[in-house]
Length: 262
Ligand SMILES: [Zn+2]
View 1 (cartoon, protein in one colour):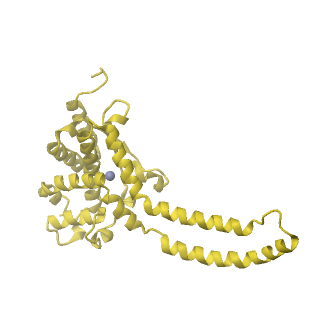
View 2 (cartoon, rainbow, N blue to C red):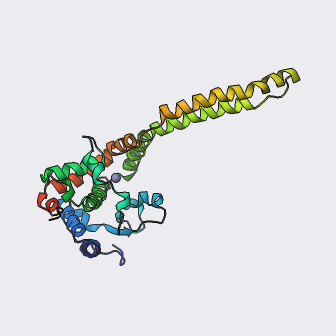
View 3 (cartoon, rainbow, N blue to C red):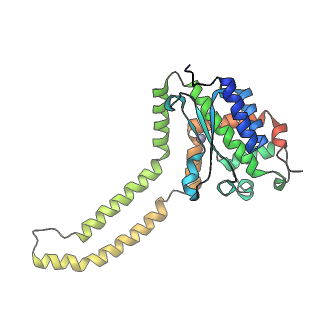
């Protein structure tokens, strides 16, 4: 341990203070996570803040693998402040189907504590707590795999490759359309003037037909956002993180209950 590396106990205390300052319940959730996996005392929690452009803030909640950080410690980056615009709404949660998405997980926590009026639950707090626990769940997974980092990275790479398959297929189909479009508007060398005119006259008609096909393709292959969300949550390492969060919350129902606004 270098002289700059802080002990797990120091990190833990620093994390608790930091989270407490943001929200007492976040500190409590972290404490419950450390009870479930004591190795989580030794992570660095890094506050993040929303950018003006909300879409560039999407990946701010994340966990960094200890074998990839400068000081060799796992990091959990968490959005602080009001990020309610990025969180699922109460309506989204209420209509969630029984699948793997964040909305359905939140719904299961609310059902667990038997809150019959969803309006009473502070959904944005519950969501923030779930996100913190989810990222800590990733870290727990990293610690389990710290002996074989290359193997682990490879497995994640593979999972992401699979996850992106529909998007790749969509891109491929569009590229084929583009090639066809270029083939139509490019008139090759070495053809007679007569042939050139014939092809040129033909171009608008053929492009129209292609545009119809293109529009249909868009409708056919667009991957719905909720389908991608489901695919994302179905990746084994994402399931691991969600299960970790779920286990922590499920074994502490009185904590979830404290999210009901009385
Ligand atoms: Zn995740």
